[in-house]
Amino acid sequence: MKITRAQVEHVARLARLALADAELDALTDEMDAILGYVETLNSLDTDHIVPTSHAVPMENAFRDDTVRPSLGTMKAVQNAPAAAGGCFVVPKVIE
Amino acid sequence: MSLTDLTLHAMQQRLRNKEVTSVELTRAFLERIGSVDPSINAYLTVTAEQALEDAARADRRLAEGQGAELTGIPLALKDIFITEGVRTTCASRILENFVPPYDGTAVAKLKEQGAVLLGKLNMDEFAMGSSNENSAFGAVKNPWNLDYVPGGSSGGSAACIAARLAAATLGTDTGGSIRQPAANCGVVGLKPTYGRVSRYGVIAFASSLDQVGPIARDVEDCAILLQAVAGYDAADSTSVDMPVPDYRATLRDGVKGLKIGLPREYFIEGLDPDVQQATDDAIAVLRELGAELVEVALPHTEYAVACYYLIATAEASSNLARYDGVRYGRRVDRGQGLIDMFMQSRAAGFGPEVKRRIMLGTYALSSGYYDAYYLKAQKVRTLIRQDFLDAFAKVDVMLTPVAPTPAFRLGEKLADPLQMYLSDIFTIPVNLAGTCGMSLPCGLSRDGLPIGLQLIGRPFGEAALLKAAYAYEQATTWHRHLAPL
Image (cartoon, rainbow over the protein chains, first blue to last red):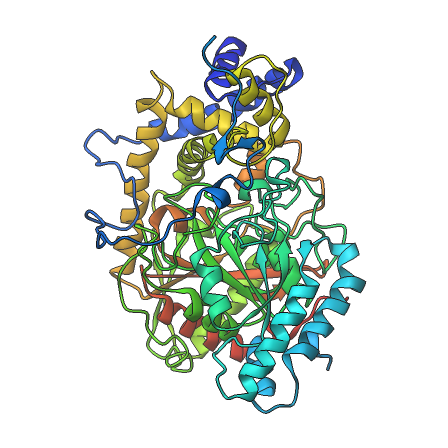
């Protein structure tokens, strides 16, 4: 086994996904199969290879620091499930 | 010939010659959407009223002689492009009621030209899939045969063009999501070089791979649409500040002396015999036209799918962290605190494939596994990219099949995610290398399903790519075959 059910539960917590038992069972098998498949990469020696994070070689991307209009509070909160006074409303964090 | 059967460039001609109005074109498409789309399910949202208003405005602009290339042309967009005031779902329950407050750059460019937006198109949820069966709003059917998938993730876009439900569309391609559905549906799709088109206002899947591109009826239509959206955008720091050539100016230059590479790793056992035959025929056509065909090697091809499914899922898990039920999207709050609200909202909002990829990506990035999976994949990506650069030192363009088989049946690969992933085996390497690729129709299988030819160009070599594609297309008749609808 590449991955255990307990590891899958841990990853689900990291990913902030409340998964049902049946989903965790299925994911354990599916992730195990996929991770087994990606093992094929280990047959390549990459010790001296520089990783590619971006396909087009690029230095820092700068633009002029000019003031321009922004979205504005009302538009920013228009899709919020709960908003009040131009703020996003979330469940209480601190007791 | 009915108006909806016209290519985009034929519509331009008729609009300019005052043989047709934008309102007439728009009405024709809206009527056809009403009669044909219930069996295809390409549209998630149809913006009929707005489209007719925009068409009337376009007609006034044309009458004043102020028309741009796309003025009055009825287009549709994959529902991954955010559109001001028009619901944008990414085919996910989590964004079911999301109405964006602004337009992305590509959309804004189309609107500035006076294009008419007919609506938003179905797709695999968050562009994750190869069959369009992962949409939260129902699968899309292949217009050539309703028992088959249109491909994915831009399945709604490709089916829309094959069914003549818009003049042309924009899709996105992360691992083949423009090219594979275009092949399955017998239309033309172009994935530009990474950085050629702004991704600002395109819902992110895997940010180092995602790219915007056209799906249209023929090569010239693709050139027109690419011309409209290509170019640097200060709002997307990964867009590249490089002049955009006039793609139509070199379209008819022909392929005499053009060196076309055939990567031997793509002509494998297990290739469907009809696909093999159609590809061989295409090679013969290009040779006849004066192209020089030479074998090349892309030795790390067999590692591409594994590499992709680590990089794409890792980036997706990070990008999709924003769907937390706070700023937009679905919220499920059982009154058990903030973390529980996050977990319940995401569990209710995402479909199975999206959850699977978030899980895989989170695992690949997690402490203790990062080096073994994500970093390893990034190093393999270097090898794959170098393969392409080495090959392009010898040839101008490469030619391959788009996929090992024509479209498969609905439901055929749903139970086995790995088999589904492998249907993108010939398109994924192009995204990893960051270069451009095209899919164009090159035959029909014995079951009457379209087969796609892939041409791959050098980084920012879209002009040469379009030229080669145009030469092939004009020498054959496959692009004139219409899905029987």
